[in-house]
Image (cartoon, rainbow, N blue to C red; front, side, top):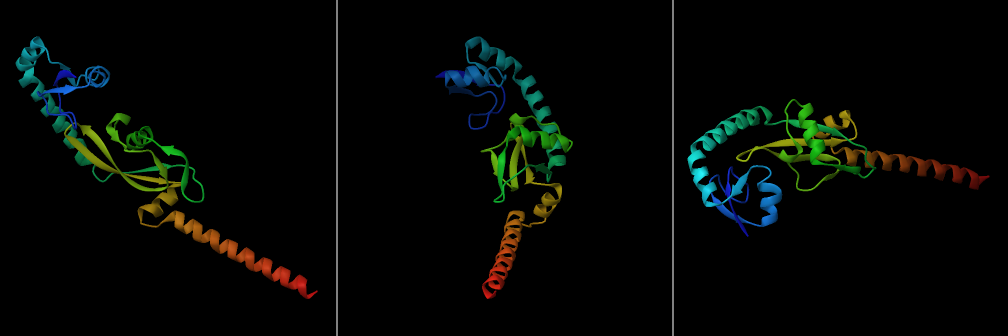
Length: 190
């Protein structure tokens, strides 16, 4: 285990200024390169204490900016158009990058690393995703995955488009079966 000083709040780890123990790979591959932490040596701890007020001020400023963006972004709905099978299963999936691109098209600049996607979206429908604008500020965005913009509008109103398509298919099959039955009935009489 390796001791590091957190330079900002890290979810599930700690607050700014805390000295925490982490695995060497997590520190080496994530915390240190992204400047979220620095090694907890005596020199670094003294340096951090001298810079603490300045770092907290910068963090507070970034947090205020993120809160302003979060207010504007609240209630945002992003439409992502994808091809899907009859059961609503997507050909492929919607990833964090797709969600970030959709939000960017909506007028807000976010990176795929800011989109908290527990697992890829693999079916049509409405999903709520968390977007982390700052370690202490997150906003929820609605992702509307549909086969067309019209279908997305129907989904937004609460219509289950997959169920509608299946019902339409069942009506067509019933009509075909009825027509087939009448044809074979006419052939049997002859």
